[in-house]
Structures are given as C-alpha cells and as structure tokens.
Length: 316
Image 1: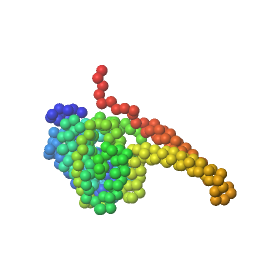
Image 2 (image 1 turned 135 degrees about the vertical axis):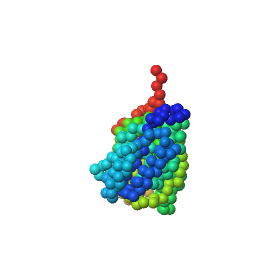
Image 3 (image 1 turned 120 degrees about the vertical axis):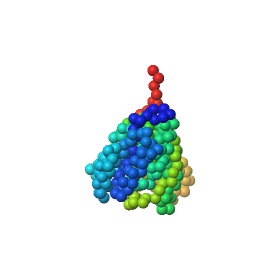
Image 4 (image 1 turned 30 degrees about the vertical axis):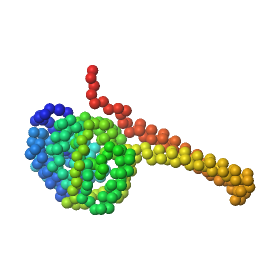
C-alpha cells in the first residue's frame, strides 16, 4: 500500500457486495457507492463486485441493468444459494484493488462512511472496521444480537460490541485473509486474528427499507456456532475441566461410599460397588472425552492451515 499524502490516480478500490434476494435495493446501493467515487473519492478508480448468491427474486436482472450503465461493475453468480460468507469470499478473490471494502446490499450500511474509511487507510490503517454501535431493529433482535456477541467477545475480545461486516482491508490484509483455506469461516475472527493495524468506526445500522432479512433462525444459529467454535477452544476446555472435576468428585464420593459400607451404612446389598463403578467409569469417560477433544482441536487447527506467524516486512 502506498502511504503518500496524496493518492495516485491509478489507485484502485474494490467494493464487494454480497447479494441474496435484494431486488429493489441494488440500484440505490450502486448509486450510493458510485456517488462517493464521483465526489470525495474522485481521485480513485473503483470497481464494484456484486456476487449474486443464487437469488430467485430478479436481483440478477437488476444487476445486469446496473452493469450495462457502469463498466466498473462486475457480477459473479452462483449456481445456488451457498451463503453470505461464500459470496464474500468469491468477491474477495476477484477483487484487484489496493484496498477492498465489504458492504451489505440492503442499504443498512451507510455508504457515506467510505471516504472516512479510505482516509483512515491512507493514514496507515491496514484494516478499518465499521462496527454497529446500535441498530434500528426490533427489540428482540437487539437482545439476541447483544447476547450472542457477548459470548463471542469472551472468545475474541478484539471484536467490538455489536459486531461488524462493513470493513475496508488493505491489499496485504486481503491477501492474508484469502490465504486461509478453511470451511465454516468466521469472518470477524479471521480478519482480526493476524493483528494488522486496525481502526474502528462506530455507526448506527439503519433499518431495512426494501424487502426483509433472509436470515432465518436456523441460519443465525449456524453462523453463531461457526463463529464460536471457529474462534475459541473454550467449549473443549470446559469439557476437559468438567471431566477432571467429575472424575475427582467420583473418586471422593467412592471413598465415602467405601467408608459407609465398612460401617454397614449401605442402603442395600450391592449398592456400594454399583455406585463406585458408575461414578468412576462416568468420570473417566468424561476425562477421556476431554482429552480426545483437545486432540480434535489440534487436528482442527492443522486442517485450517492458518500460518504460524504473519510477516509485515522483511529487511535483507
């Protein structure tokens, strides 16, 4: 990334927009993005990459009309709906810009923040995160979102409250993100994990004006599980600790049962050995599951092929 005070005319900024059932909002989204590059960012070239994630509502026709009016627009289409993360990844792989911006297609992310994001990038930030300080959503959606992100922040403290999808990535950060060859990815965790210089910009997520959210409860639950399990080994450690505690309590209780049996206080004949077997075997099984879980986590780490370190610069 060039760090000159004034940008070169040849600098290209890519904007990636994942599309799924967004008919009616795409023209306005494109117009808002284009307005920024014809106004405050007119020193930059731009490309807008729309990735149609198997829409069936006519979104693709709207995208084709947009493409006919703007040669800076690219379109990628999927054979079916693979999910927002897959659409984002396809756009990131296609993006050629020195900086890459990811923004939603539903007009809930303010395009007016793009010049500020670019300004922070030019002033040395490698990632600019616009996070949701608040959202114009129903009360129940707000409560569920806050609870989910509170759990995620326990695993990844760098995640700002409210989470984010609206980001700018420098080319080096984009290439690093694209190098992670894994499934069931957690966008926010994978983006923050390498430790690039990051700026945070709060904003209020706008209410949806066109259409309705395509995130069902099942999709939201899957995304949360992908995020929580990808970002943290806390569940495995909890199982391991529970196994150790259960096994220890089983041993202690077994000792008390033996003492009671020697004093003739067993409730009925055969009760003592039965309880000892259940407690010891159950505790050992929990302990073994925890140990196996630790190995599974390490295998998972290897399969994800994350690098052991990230080099910012080499001086030879």
